[in-house]
Length: 152
Length: 124
Image (cartoon, chains in turn red, blue):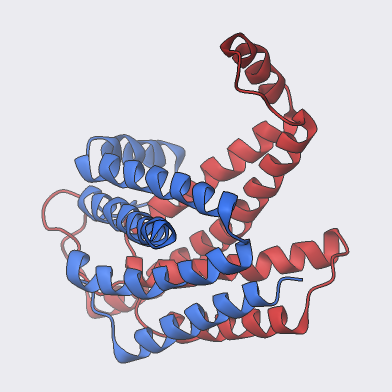
């Protein structure tokens, strides 16, 4: 990319790095849990599955892929994995991995607001501690390694 | 013994797989925009990295080990053990990816691991 960067450019690119890292993590913590929920919903609608005799496998596969929830789940998880790959192309794994644990909070919030599930105090406490941990991690620089020299 | 092996595979292959994917993406280099053409370019480049394939294979292994563990033990027992992945991940980041994990980042990682254990102990 551009080899000439002034110091103000470095600062603004650091800000830019932080912003796009947070953006990708937000996408990850929503699409990951949503994908799992959709897949589970889709598989439940299929009912109990039999892997034997093998002649049952094709009708089973057709039944699974006929469910719109399965496709919603697959596209959510695909979005999740692509954002995961993208964010890891510029940010530390040791930054992204703890930050993506905010997904536990998203799961609890989705369950609480959308499904009316009861969430125990202990679980809220755990989510609060996770959030605190992610906040502490997010105060460190998203990237501590130098980009590999050569073509970008 | 069987449970120990299963848990070791879940943590080691799961974290190891993510570390390999991470290494592949560092080799691919930074995605410079969110333009679909650029995203496609990055994905295609990543598929040419052997680390990517190693990573996906290890993550698949961890996934089946997790299914195996869940078929025998309660989720509330399995998942707190996998919170160790956060500690293993930070350690792997230092050793395998040469990332700089400051004392502050370690502290955050430990908080996250403790929080994950509480979330699952609190599952009613």
